Length: 197
Image (cartoon, rainbow, N blue to C red; front, side, top):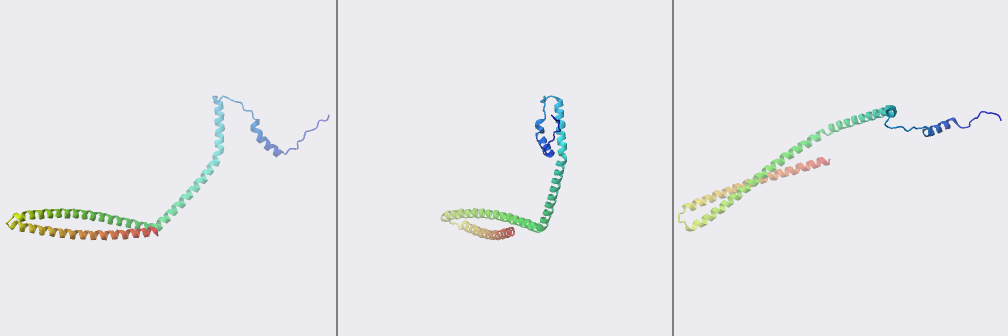
């Protein structure tokens, strides 16, 4: 029998790939007690090595991400400045309209409160007039002296005059309120047109 050298026909690259695939299954793993400090030390070193290997790639990714975020923030800031410069006048006009509307609203509420007070006064005067009329009718039948009657008539004239003055004041305030309401409606209409534009 002749001794010959054994030659393999397997591709070295394919063989290397196959060895890498099965290498993990061929390793003998001795089970050790997790409580042993050597095991913990080796595991710590292994984890540290894995972390150190991954740090450069992670730092590169984080650096690229930071640059991208910085660029986006600069673009947003530039766009914001542009928008503010373009609409600065419109924003100021809007604030002025809002302030004017608030002033008109406050004035309307103030005048409306005044109208309520005048109406209350008118009701009180009307009640007093009715009381005077009743007293005059009761006393007119039994009184022979015309002096009190004259005074009552004078008082009634004064009350009627006060009522006319109250009516005039109510008319004036109502006119002012109507004017304020028309101004408020016009302001709101302009504001809505500005919003639509």
